[in-house]
Length: 243
Image (cartoon, rainbow, N blue to C red; front, top):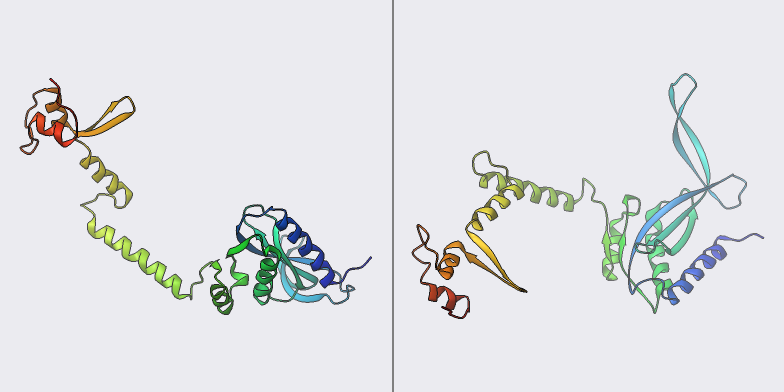
């Protein structure tokens, strides 16, 4: 029994629709785009062909680069990020670029999920990257995640922000002190050095050591002038005055 491409796609996508109706996928779905070659021989009617370079090592260990012709198909998938089950399947000729099939694959996934789930985000690799398709996704309310290329404006912006943050940290550095999270931990330690946590059953309170000493009636040296009296400390924290 032989299948043509349209019938084969129909079988796979019909199965995906059945899974969607059964509640296999969540209500908001993230799809991951992927493509893989399905190599055949040149005798398969309608298959594509592409010439690629391969590195081959001979018996003497010498590496040679040869051009070879590969025949077959390219299977394009949009895969659910949670279940790892395909959301859509498309089959193209092996020489066709992935970016030519982005819209068809997303549209097929939306049709397969119709009525039970919504495709709200798609993750692509560089093979699927095309500006017009990203604009099309945005117009359809779909969030996209793509790797940034060196010549993209977003890449330049991200690097500029990272550089600006690094320079700011360097300007704020004290002497030879490390910057970033290490300095933040030092500042946090300095700010909480004179505080204690008091637990009473399921309740707790955070007090300055001077306030805690006043509540206990313990005399300490160098009490801060703004610490107040024992009664003022109790009133400030909403505690009852006891003998």
